[in-house]
Image (cartoon, rainbow, N blue to C red):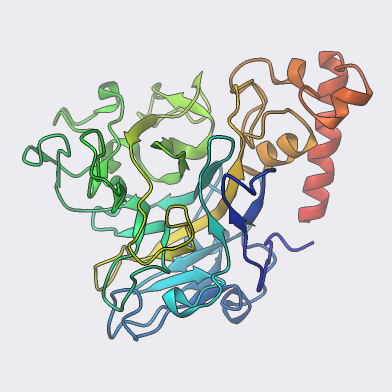
Length: 393
């Protein structure tokens, strides 16, 4: 089964009137592609037409095996499962994309009160301080000309220049490498709307090993890290999970390396930004500009990026979740899909508490059978994980 989900020629218009269910648009671990040519039938390389503000730059996204970039456990894909990633340098690859020239766009997503939009993925960090590499999501259809950004604009990944505090527009924020960007939101320019250009995740000060009062890539070390953003009609929540292990990493071993998988359940950094979805003057749909473009590679507005390996990219709508332990896919239940997602992403079965006691809750399983005892649930999870491993091999 291909890991990617192709909705070629299909427009998903998720508005308040039509949004009824969770939808997965992209869930790609890149393992089913056999070549870079195969990859670029889905993640199309942008060219030098100025579509993505990169005049004269041609994308060179390359499919690479994770073993080929010097990765060793626990930094493979995820721990115990080797696979492919995409090495993107000096350009951009867009999912099923033709930029603003594509009509209809491959998807149209608008967050509602009942469905949020979530996207993200994993980056391998070799602690190169000069890296610029991101996963971007935005509208690319309204008032979009070559050399101009779209609207409702998000980027997650690495940046290497000082930022400015968005609350005052003056105070400098020194670079740490781990970055996000939230821009061109806010149709009415409300006082509580923030459009911070490049910002940095603020990590726990106890992780500062060189005593420079800054927690950056050098303090954390090399490894796979997961970035995600969840968009509602009024907020964007961005998160960084160091080593994508589902815990807040604070402890170090005798060699000074962060102990992966050790710590309290959760993420290492989370920021909530108030926003308002932008509506362009030429948008006559009756709603805000939808998200229409998912891309990996160089950040917008720059001419190049230092190569960065990306993996396990997702784009989906999710229902607001109570956050019960084990709900790895955020759909409000704990079922086989969560077991598969948790196993694929390297999640532990104790993220957020005792995962096993919630198995079957809120799902079709719980409507048919009673919630299994913890031992039975763990046996079922083990069977599911085993099947997933067999499928991989």
